[in-house]
Length: 209
Image (cartoon, rainbow, N blue to C red; front, side):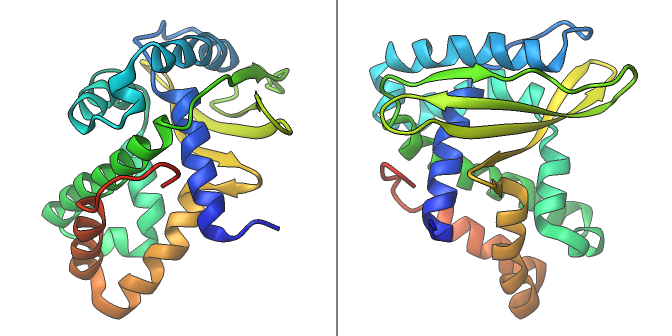
């Protein structure tokens, strides 16, 4: 059984490999087709760019801002990770939480990208009924060693499908962060969590974090 820290490192590293090159997509593109198309492109993008693999934060941040964030419901992801206390936060605090959470994930991306080598992503058949607006897209990351399951939760919006959570090895990103955040929120409140996230996001990125 892997520990929580290893789970989070693996989760974000693999999700980085599968998610980073989200480009503008047609509103009617199926969610599994979206993941298949984009995950096929991302690995080549990372492998071909030494700066991304080396953890160039400016380049990673620019890339994520331009091509990832438009295809992720990051507000939903942040609010779910914060949990019930999100509704108690002021609009200014909510903005800070999103900004600091994003910085923390960018730091994790920087370490994760250095791990991309010979991986490929295989999308499994989608179980989806007509009219579904919330789906699970299951994929498998293959490379050296045993294949690793990587699942995505997407919701249908007027402009297309948006990712709002992902899972590696049975560990969901949002739920894992919610557990981590809850302790800080209970001790020091929303401002305490903001300060903790800010301090963590300024630490140097390392491979595997």
